[in-house]
Amino acid sequence: MLPPDADDSKRVRHLGTYEMLWDCKFCGAQGLPAHTHRFCPTCGSAQDPKTRRFPSDEEKKAVADHVDKGADLICPACGTTNSGDSKFCHQCGAPLENAETASRVQDEVRGEGQSFQAGEQRDLAAESMAQDLKTAQPASSGIPRGVLIGLIVAAIACVGIIFLLTRTQSGTAVVTGHSWEREILIESLEPHNESAWCDSVPSGAYSISRRTEQRDTRRIQDGETCSVRRIDNGDGTFSEREECVPRYREEPVYDDRCYFTIDRWGYSRSVISTGDSLAQAPYWANTQLQFASGIGAEREAGRDEHYVLLLHGDGDAVYQCEVDYDLWQSATDESTWNLEISVVGGQPRCDTLKPAS
Image (cartoon, rainbow, N blue to C red):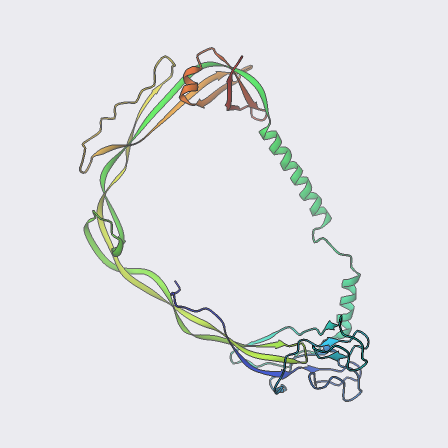
């Protein structure tokens, strides 16, 4: 159980902003600073943001007074990278209104005591081929055609089964008999052994004893678990931050548990009266309750009644319908009634019983 004042929120601390590295795909120069070198110092080729990678801990260089202008914009005319707030390309002057932003490298995370290694060089030829194949493939709905057809057939079959199970046909039946049952539930007052936390023992409890038991569990903060995350800013730099979440240990919470005896009412027996003829008026049996108060006293806990008509349908069909008392009394022997009968199973819909005209 978490204490009310516990805080599961993550604590984040900014550690600094550093240069990404990039590799020139034309001359092979590697490990060029991505923020300060927009062009290769060896061959003059424009930086390709897709070749950016994180440096190792030994290679990283801090960027002083970094101003976040958003991810770089890629000139659609010459492919040069421009700062995120640029309106026109600083290389060819083309407008950047609809320019794409530079792709970002997926975050890197290391745990406490670990170090970052140099990011892997990206195989641009393989990435380009994979993208071409993805573009060439037709869009898919995600559900194979055979599976889709199977689902449709199954749905149609379910609808058909439901239709058959709920379909009925009209029929007639003759009342051939009556039965009834009336039940009175009796409960008695008896001692019961129970337990509860001592701050919630019910009134009327007696013979009380107590003992200390574990009632709950609480979490106590026991330090933090921290990691360092690198986030590509998209402008040739990355931010490094420490993320810490609370670490907890569980401690038992003890309290006094009380054991006691208490007198409670509970089900004891039933008194039932039955009959199998309309001529015999239903009645409630004599309960003969024991005592009025004290241990062993009895009282009524409720009454229940059931009235059943026996009917003979077409052919050898025999039905039983439980109905209310007024209908049961009005359905005289040999009277004819209309009702709906299920096509599957031949069971009567007793709620549709109506006198035949």
